[in-house]
Image 1: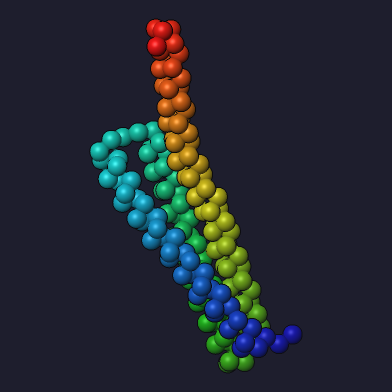
Image 2 (image 1 turned 90 degrees about the vertical axis):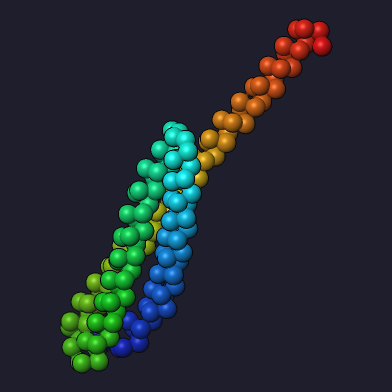
Length: 150
């Protein structure tokens, strides 16, 4: 089966958009890290420590996502050159490697999204604890006020 130059070229827009999405995730994460750093310098908390730990993992995931995305892009370019030069056998291998690299990038992206939702769960659990404490405080004030005859 002959590989045409348009086959690897079809991946160019997809990989480019994927890299843009990865860069946006990285920039959002960098902003969050800077914000959490300021909070951590003011006051240490268990939630902050857990969030920072989660961010370390997510930063490595994004690095891997971007690295495999760039590798996939480079392999597509190499594949196109091999097709252009008439080396079909090598072009097939390089294209397969490009697809594998893209697959790994997407797997890391999926894991990072899962980690991201875990980070949001940490935030929500902290807010839930505060909400429960407020409700408990209101309840205790109401009960103690009734005992005092108020």
